Image (cartoon, rainbow, N blue to C red; front, side, top):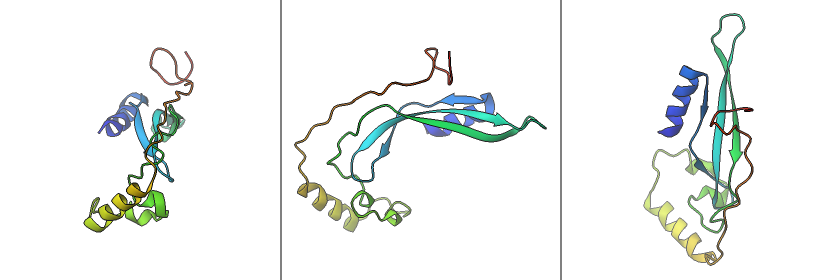
Length: 125
């Protein structure tokens, strides 16, 4: 929902700064991301020609021992493309994989420096 709103903001206002959202890591866990996007206009007709998006990773890898999708273990992305998000066989396999991992390791959030301006807009201040 929020990414859709940001896309509409880019089309209407020319730029957007998203809320924080998570991206899954291939080997388990996730990182927090924030995206700054700007519309690039065609010089001949002032229509949007491209959208330039810069993704900022604003955390370290979190919950790296927790697998939230089968493709994080198998590398098979066909499960991601499936219309069915949860089926019993897939859920059983995920539960089996999670029970075999050591969940005692805790992770801390390491916030990386960001490069957007203090007034909440993209680019330099």
